[in-house]
Image (cartoon, rainbow, N blue to C red; front, side, top):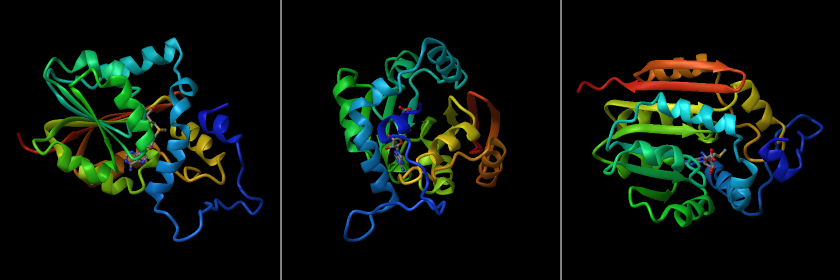
Amino acid sequence: MGIFQRFFGGRKKASDGSHAVPTQGGAAPTMNSQRAEFFDAMATEWDTTTKLNQAQEQQLADLIDRLNIPEDAVVVDAGCGTGVLYKYLAPRIGSKGRVFGIDVSPKMISLAEAKFAHDQRFSWHTGAVEELLEEIAPEGIDRIICYSSFPHFSDQKLFLQVAARALRPEGKLAIIHLGSSDEINGMHSDMGDSPVAQDTLPSIRDLTTMAQDISLAVQTSQEQPGVYFFLGASLRPS
Ligand SMILES: C[S@@+](CC[C@H](N)C(=O)[O-])C[C@H]1O[C@@H](n2cnc3c(N)ncnc32)[C@H](O)[C@@H]1O
């Protein structure tokens, strides 16, 4: 049983097959605020319910290794949740590296802050990544990592455009899942009446086309059952 089913009991689509999203009186909330509310509700138990087994931890460590994070890098963990990437990034960024964790869910961010306040190299920010990315590190970013978060960004093309602008020359954007797009999309669509039910991870081929359209050079695109790994490089001249 996946994380969303554990929390919400695997609610299915309505009988007419629609993906109606319930609103709570008054004006319909924006998609980002609906997602923030959805992930807020999961935050307290997030670490327990999404805990990786040893093989998955090793798989994720190997994928992060493939980012070749430079010493003293500026890194953004886009859609950081409770900071699950902390243990993979902390040993790889050198003493002067910095990681900006960004998430729309205030509860996810406050849990990350509580766990990792001792490490001054990391800072945690509530907000939409497509809005914060450029202002958070105006000097430019070496690595932007979307781990299990890209499908939830409400405007993926806009995010890719902002990311391409925010990267330094030599900078890279990584989109990582421990599952193929079919696997991830199947899990979301099983949540027929939740704000994430229609959140979609494009096939790696479609993502490659999207990235090329906004001038990111595709370095790696790999997709198979159990793994999705995209690495795009800035085309900015150094
Ligand atoms: C499936 S969770 C993954 C969290 C974390 N990366 C992990 O693997 O544990 C997706 C996260 O993306 C966040 N998110 C969704 N849309 C976002 C946006 N536009 N900007 C920043 N974070 C967003 C959600 O609040 C949620 O915490």
